[in-house]
Amino acid sequence: MQIKGLSATGIKDFLQCKLKAFFRYDRDIPSIKNDNMKIGTAVHEALEKFTIRMQEKKSFPDDTDYEYAINVFMDTATDQGLESMEFYEDGRIMVSEFIDRYNPAEEVVSVEGFFEIEIDGIPLRGAIDKVVKINDDTIAIIDYKTARNALTTWELKDDIQLSTYDLAASIMWPEFKNRILILEYVRINKQVETYRTEEDREKFKGFLSSMWEKMKNLTEEDATASYNKFCGWCDYSSYCPKYASLVSDRLVLPSASELSDGEFLDQWEELSAKKSMIDARQREMKMMASQRFMNGDSISGNGKELYSTQASRTNYDVSKVARVIPQEDLFPLLAVNKGRIDRYVKDYPDLKISLDRIAEVNYNAPVYRTRATREDEDAEPVPTQQDENAA
Ligand code: SF4
Image (cartoon, rainbow, N blue to C red; front, side):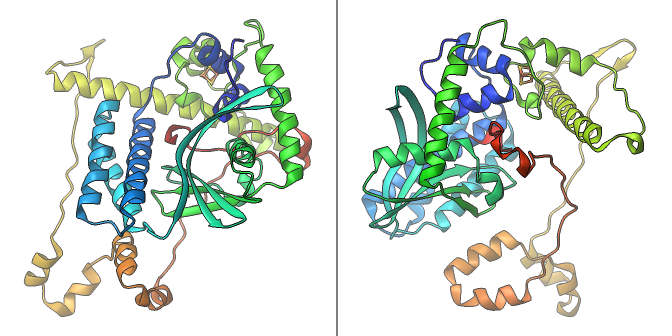
């Protein structure tokens, strides 16, 4: 396979599916971005430009800074062709809330630093969103994520992207002995941290060298398709025979209680992969239907036609409701918005402890995922489940 350099994304692609890597790097087929990827790109651009601007201003942000960053987001999102209005609103909120949390005392070492460095003859490439100096010995390497769910510290232990950043930063900023690796989830205001030891770094170099050889030596015959939980978001699904056959295959479902644990997990992963493919296909068809309806077309055939219904959502302005409903009945009817409380507390930090004391935490239904077990630690690292669409 023809590859110009090694990147965390390239390695993850290769480990997920050799055919996908072959399409992307050898055939050089451009990837098609979905709305999740477009919003990720636009938010990254806004945060980067905002941080550069604030480095020059060295002050707390004012209204013009919010306006500037949101304009960058909007311009990039429209350039990217983001279609969903809901995503535009999401992006504006993410950018505004990021600015709310901005700390002008932060000592930024680098913003969106693209790097291409040679390590033991391997050209390693990537881009680090932000590097911040913590003290004379330590930097924090920050990667922004727009995903809704954060990975855990344990899941970051083998994260290929963070290991790549750690290695690159050890060469680019050798004056800092310690590197904290942080995923900053801007949508949910959460940071997850990890680090690498000298031993981890040496092991990772060995891993890179083996991946470089494997990827360079991949032939077209060996570039086989392996379905995985990211197939539904794969940019090359329309070229992929496995995708076509999986979507059209009939599901054979033996009784779940008769499955061994291994069969149970295999079927769990197979169903997840198929579901994500089918969801992605349905999203694509919905977008197409909505486009055709907007153009005044109808979709009919085989004795059926597509039609749309639209649920309405009614909102009330609290101040107006308070004028109508007696105060003694009002409180049970109101809900407090956590995001707004968090923003309010930024301005009145003395209230935080009292609010934390009265906060009621409820948990959603558990989400089940599969992962490699600890006994498999010597096996090739499996990419952790990041939001692929969130840069
Ligand atoms: S759809 Fe799945 S199996 Fe096909 S190329 Fe993409 S990742 Fe590979």
